[in-house]
Length: 319
Figure 1 (tube, rainbow, N blue to C red):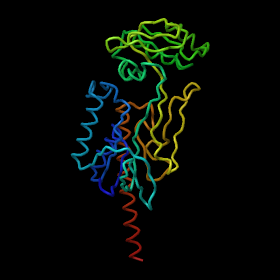
Figure 2: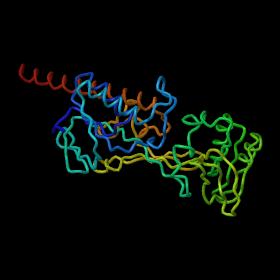
Figure 3: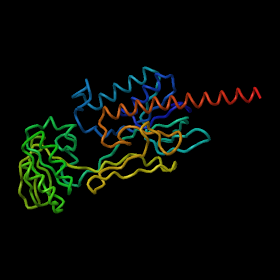
Figure 4: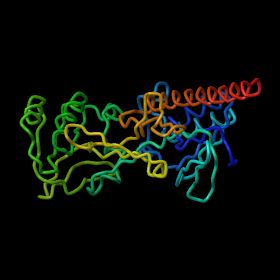
């Protein structure tokens, strides 16, 4: 790791690596710092990524790293602990005590899921405990899917999963009464509702086979759907005054995000953000596209900054 770069990118997933590719191909010096804990690491395969369906998420990252390095970029495994402004630049520090300066910083750290505290959920997460019908729904088509309800979100989730299988059951785990509209939606969809809190998942032969209620009753399922709170990984930005904002859906906070404009600019000049840390609903291709856009915009910003300085210097000499 050198001491100075044009751009330091924090986060080495599809967004960060796509940005790094655009920047290194524009002959920028780029350092990518990756904490090594991608959100999708528990999943064996990724989907909805054109030409890469069923590829391992870790394989996609390895291919991306190799591509960035082929254009002269540097990718290192390191957890970023803080960022502070130093003059016209930024100093990025890592948890192991290293530091690098950058003219621009791009944040692509993604999200961290906060799973419900139910035995078996964390252990099966990304395998047969799912949350996104577009990410893994096709793989459980026509199977028995149990949705752990979270208030009014139950009707929304049930509609999406019902498109994939007619064997959907909602478990009213949170004990919250379903509002009349949600109850009607579930009835029209033909989705039964099971009352009672969930005690845990039943796992046999390395696969989920059922949901156990606190009453002791077990209902057979092949997959379980939960709605984790997806939190933006952005705590290291506190010294810059950048904080996350809540995203609400049907009256509930479902995620947090960094605020950035469509091109990736945050409220701090020189700091950009892309990928799911900005748009929690973004899947891998959308995150990669977001990173590419941000990388191109950062390069253009640097070009304009350098050109303005040269013009200013030229005019100063002429006067």
